[in-house]
Length: 158
Image (cartoon, rainbow, N blue to C red):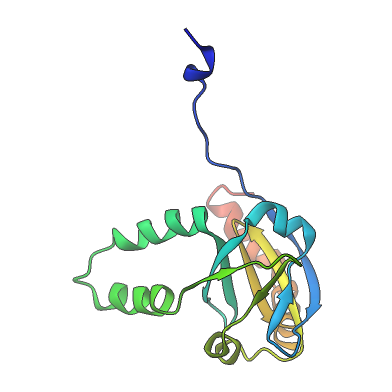
């Protein structure tokens, strides 16, 4: 009897953290940081995100996330709208041999991406922001970080 038959199979653990500023090239490609490439794989799903950024998921994380969305009631107009927003705008994108991914035109326009962009690792996804929008957003959050921490404390997170 082989013992390796008794070892449970666990999907790879993804931990995407950090903030990186990069440049979008003329072909609308961005080079993913090496730390992200190791974690995310050769194909990713990119879609419209919240707060006018883009969300990037590994295919495994996207499968988990989209299954949760698919379980929501289609009888709710808000659910249908949110599914259309996220799932309808999602595309599978290859990571090339140089670690770059191409951002489709409609997503580049949605996030108002200029040449300088920020890639932020947020546990199981990457967010892509226009650098100026990211700066405005983070400055606003920094001003209210204490209040946000207090709210998280109220629900037992901190």
